[in-house]
Amino acid sequence: MRPLAAKSSTIEGTNPSLAIVDEYHLHPDNSVYSALELGQGARPEGLLFAITTAGSNTISACKQHYDYCCQILEGNEQNDSIFIMILNWTKKAK
Image (cartoon, helix red, strand yellow):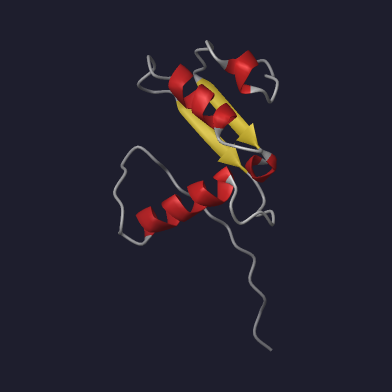
């Protein structure tokens, strides 16, 4: 295991078996996620995780990914290569 810098230019050309994008909502664009995803092209069993809290940027790459995942969960899109787990905190009714 080794950490990678959060710059797509330093990640391009890697071939990770497992990649974890942490705090995805803070990424300015999708370049790091895409570089890691492309790097796993030769690995049919490669795993790519995006872990994050919600953040407040409603036009970020993370929000776009979230919206796409919601479309899959709602049955409007199909993508059997993605496992989605979204945990939401809800207030208890009084």
